[in-house]
Amino acid sequence: MLRNFRNFSDVEFDFYKSGALISGENGTGKTNLLEAISFFAFGKSFRNCHDTDLINFSSDHLHIRGEFVKNEHILQFESGIEKNRKKISLNGSRINRTSNLYKFIKTVYFSPEDVEFLSGAPVFRRNFLDQALSQYSFSYLELLRRYSHILKQRNILLKTEYENAIKKSWDKQLINYGSKLIDCRLKYLDSFIPRLQKNYQCISANRENLSLKYRYSFPRRESESLSSDLEEYLEEIAGQEKETGHTLAGPHLDDLQFEIDNHPVRSFASQGQKRSTAISARLVQAEMIRVKDSETPILMFDDVLADLDKIRTRNIIKLLHSDHQIFIASPNAAIYKDFKLKEIKLELLP
Amino acid sequence: MFTGTLALLVQHLKKLPGIGNKSARRMAMHLIRMNKAEAIALAESIKTAVEKYRNCSVCNLLSEDDPCQFCRAPNRRDDLLCIVENTQDVYLIEETNEFNGRYFVLSNLLSPIDGIGPDQINFPALCEYLRQHQVKEIILALNPSAEGESTINFLAAELATEIGKITRLSTGIPFGGDIEYTTSITLGNALKRRYKVNDQ
Ligand SMILES: [Zn+2]
Image (cartoon, rainbow over all chains, first blue to last red; front, side, top):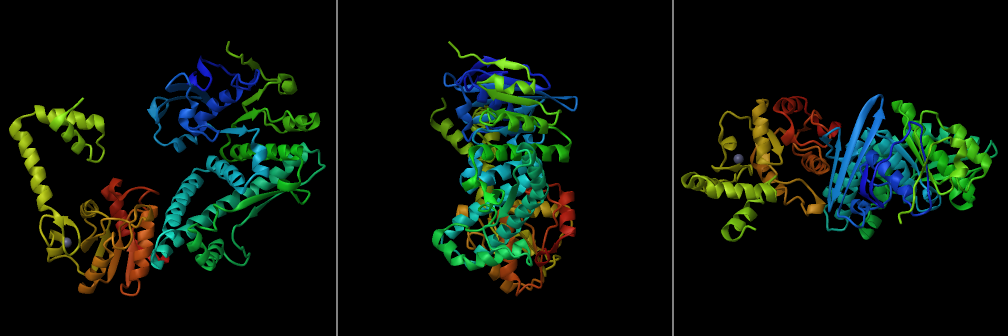
């Protein structure tokens, strides 16, 4: 049930277990509907926007309700946003921190902008990894939050006249939590990368080989531990950090490098290759959750298959686990016939 | 709308922790309606307590007497010092019956965002305390928050040469949790299972 959510003033939808194909012209709110479903997984939009942006322009509040069936249990979410206040409840009890929602409903959103994380700035790739991992492991989220807080404190300290002993008290934590964070990422990538390669090979019909490397923002020696490498480098660049007032090394500056047949995707890949890479990565994001928690996340394709050829699209369908609930949004329903989903056609309001 | 002295009262009540506009208004309405003598007794007791309580000149604890009861007590160990953030932490630790040393109250934790450095955590006064007392072990009973960790790291490094044993509470306290919200049983265990800071 959506009330005053984006362009929906008051509407209810019922979906099959298999999902739905959401069709309709541009401007009918296909992405908005996906956004509403995903809202219950994250307590916020998947778009980088403010909560109040979700409210219909003709109103000052919104109210949404969603009922999910998971392991034969009913999860009833409700949320209201008014001015700067947001309330979310699950089966009648209030959820205080949005991150406490993460463990209930898991969604993976295949965004048309996913291609950006391959060609854009490193921050997009870090965000992809951080988001995937936060959904995968609650302790990663706690670790990430702690690290970001330490980073914020340390950056402010670097901009002031500080005593070296005080800086050291923050360095120690930055190194400790920073190396733990990187360690979690590496462990995740250990099982992520082979799955990614397999998926990509399947999509490209064995013609191309995709690989992924973790890029450190500091010199990394195999003989030393992560923390001593980071510690040593921070000592080396202390003068530079003082000058700029920024922490210049750590997981917040690390990057991922995707390569197809040993060429960086960022600069060499075609649009179709980038699209296939992004879809492969999202599929592994879902697969990792399925393997760890034996639950199948809801998959949401926001018209991402449109620019792929028929063979690649068919190969992607082959990769999908049959238990997923799948939502596809597209102005062109015909392309997605093979998914055999019930079509929900959104109409433009008069 | 509340006006005049009532509005002023609401403004003051809102400064209390956990009191929003709504509760402040309800409390203010209740105060002016209640028995006059009782309400004035309440106001007086606030006034006396606030005036009488000051920081102990030895350990910085908020106390009616100076030196405070813990600094004066003859049967407490002088060689064991427990460093806490706030006066209320002292009472929580007292409830565990696991500690029989002296206390020192920092009043703050290191936090660059809030402009809190060594002076604001009473580090100079702590150094003075240590010059005047023969302390063999320091227990850093601070929140395991980022600010608490920073303070622990700082104090442990600064005092390492003078103090033989510097310990911190075991992590019986949940990640990101407050000392204030843990039950005294868990805090007691955390005290018993304290470990050397440099061993972590
Ligand atoms: Zn005292």
